[in-house]
Length: 359
Image 1 (cartoon, rainbow, N blue to C red):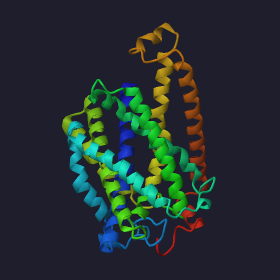
Image 2 (image 1 turned 90 degrees about the vertical axis):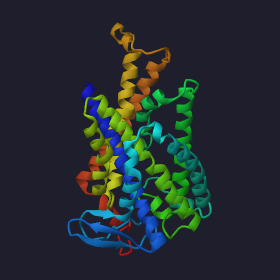
Image 3 (image 1 turned 30 degrees about the horizontal axis):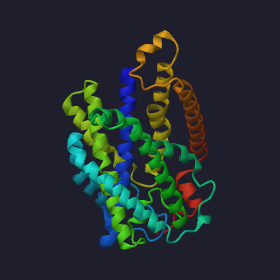
Image 4 (image 1 turned 135 degrees about the vertical axis):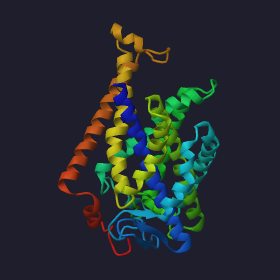
């Protein structure tokens, strides 16, 4: 059980890092194209150079119409050179960068909200979007930060109140997600999977473009080293050598991420990993442990730690577990329906007009 949990925990962090790397690299490519006119990529199978002139309309995807093959883009290479080495440091050594990242997160989120409210069209946001099967997994993925809580508990000073901090983080994140999602939807007629592609393109004002680039690199990008460190700690705790822990945790995500750079690859990573890995490790397993530790059976009492569990936590955990299981099951059914009926990816793009000569 321990080894299996460690493996799933590693895959959970790995998938989050892959998503963060691709999101940052795509936004960086869009920023490069907006600043210099073009971004470039090496088509590895054909060993040819591809060029992309950036987003000329809403909903575009970087290098979408490049020749078939795996692409190593300029944005990806820049992110690897600048962010990759940080994954070999410790959490303490990354602390200053994380504090700066938080300040920028608040400031840039407010900037984006101010930009979105300048041209709102509420009718653009439909009750059900064109890819409803991805919603559950992506939402779960967005609240998967709880895998970092154990490491944070070990690092925090005793005066920091854990429950208040976690509640504040969850509630503020939920409000920010809703505001950015809805206001972004009413401001952008056809947003791509990665809305930073629009915010860093020539379609946006210079100030917003600069803010989008900083957001991608300093907020999403700086989260990559943290997950690399956590993966390395997990592998070392499991008995893996220091060398291979560094290779798998520090270099592994970068070796895999570029494989899902193109098209809707990143959305598929978010959706499937959110439903399977994040839901299981971040939500279902903790609720099962709470149910067991609050059980009235005598053999469950030894799992209790401290007095943080109240008399009503057993019922609360049962209700939350039921809600999560229903949501995950619904998301899996929708994703399987998409897979077996061929209604995702390029077909969905063509139906909604996303694949055009200027994509």
